[in-house]
Image 1 (cartoon, rainbow, N blue to C red):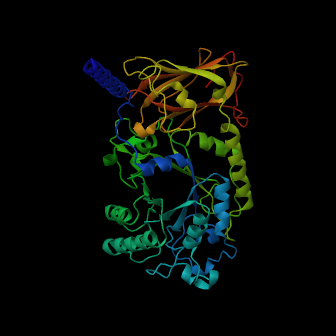
Image 2: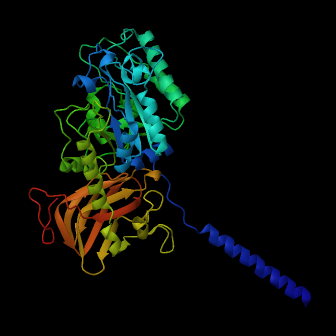
Length: 493
């Protein structure tokens, strides 16, 4: 009898383990990724959303945009230069990466390069002992801000320019200086800018990129053709209304004007993850000019919606003045801009409603429900519908007094690939917005204020099953469209 109970207990115990093991096997996994995928450095870069450019050099003192290369270093004397002020301005604006023009087209170097005396060493600033790059790196490190550098390939001063072997060696040597002597550099900027009468010159970009990788393991390389971040194709700060992070790098080349439309929109069939960066100046010019003023807040917000709101990172140029400080008018405008963005997006009105979806991957107890789009993780938690369904949608229903908004925000879980090709937005069953790509973030600024009981986003087409990581309804009090009106009884977008 004892043996019978012993064997019965063993059978029950074994079956219990089998049941536990069976339940483990039923845990629903995320869907397979859609290639290509971003690298970790690209994901971190994308999440910055807003970064800063600092155009500074001899052009600041000559009231010009492109220097001739014949400027005397004696004109460079920013007696009040304070890189800590630059960094504080960036921090207040919510910026975590600052890119400095270490050398612009005029060839003047903002650090004491041992390969030329056309630099700060020949200027009266700090009796020739100054180093702008070092000042910025030190100030940024103290505030936890990352640094990037621009080293212009076109050099109008150095006589080696036009002699391919000599100049490529010179450029590579300066690149080594900057990436070896100044700590971690998070972004390096290359471009193909060159005047029409410049000497014929081929750059060894392949060698330069290899050197960058050798010296900086977590850096992103920017150029028209990447390999990590691509130019958006214009200097207005506007991405295409369709904007893919994917593209075919084999179709790209640096300085090729014929590719600007392609790099503006990207390619849904692209084999490379190469997200776009929108560069634009807060002023009309890239360098500081006494006669110029910063753009209006309404213009900066328009740029934001058409860059960050179209799956891009926005690179705002904020040029220091001849004193070596960011002008107070620019500081104030950036402060207004940051306050405006915070006012618009700090409150998600969708959180006050009930959310549901067309379906849920793995059923009601899985980790992929629509509630994930309202949490604070905008990357790795997401709503995933069933793959076998033909229709995919998310819907917010108001709890009590209804919804009042004029901005709709949608974000994808881009860590598993960019997927959404086409979507529409309905308020109480009426079409109020539509678009193509989403990517890291898509912002729809509607044609007027919407008053509705429900808001539905329909995903009409995607690469594989769509994965929505975040969703928001926001009110922008600064948006006054020329023909805007309440959309409670109609639609306009």
